[in-house]
Image 1: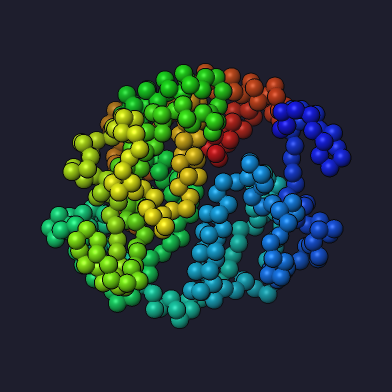
Image 2: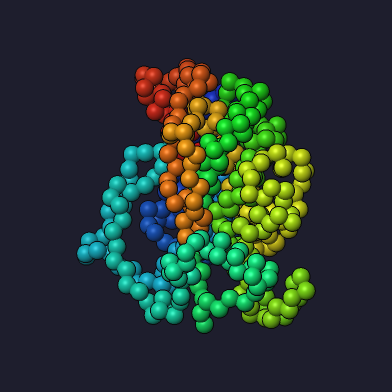
Length: 392
């Protein structure tokens, strides 16, 4: 939406005009693409750098998707691993139906069905997650107990070959982190009340935006404290030195697989005051936290490339939920914070809570009805607003 009058491609666009760019149509324009409806990856092999004005899967300019780099890396890793490990075939002789659903997001009408058969390479790989079931407690707790017995760095023989599965989608980890954050807030109503007061004072009667982040110090502290106590990936993906090195006085031979237990580090009483308590205030007064004691996204060159995007998504999502709903526990008992025994740290019991719309939600709904005129009833408007909030 331009804030002042513009001329784009010879067209006069008045201020306040809502512009939609049809990327689907642009990507199939016969003026721009040879055989535009054909699936031909070769066109990108020979094209070099593609003109950004004709290829915009993640948008363009300042409002482009900030997670495009992460998304591409995840897709390459995931698709490459599937092609490596399985022989993939369609079910039957007919081609797969490529019809699209009528929806904002472009998805298939018919869910994909395929046949997969393991390739020989899969037999050579040993999945770490496949050997977690004998553990009596989550792996980060087991390794923490071992470190207390054998020291901060100790050898752990898993197998002659090791493969760590990295099918870890960004949306899944963000959603899991939100579940932990809501559980922590519901178990600490005083923290929830303080966050609500900050949002009401700093944002007011509109929905939280990215430009508000700098003024929402307590909300950011809640996100950081949640990541400290409940890191979604408690074991940082393994590293392997290419040559001998010394770390913290320990000799590490080349080829050693190193695991860093972020969960244990974040609860170390020598680094944190009351390490097992949920206290967002520790991040309010701490300023910039020492990167060596707080590593929810890893550290160094191998750190998670999507950390900035993940934090923005979590702040927007959690802030919107606190703004728009009164959140309460189901019953008087505190929420069970037990963790599953898995590589990713998720709750044993899925979170259940009660939510009741706050007055601000009705003001936002009225704004939507008046400005966009996309709904015909208050029921429709509530539906669209709920979808918007939970799809951020």
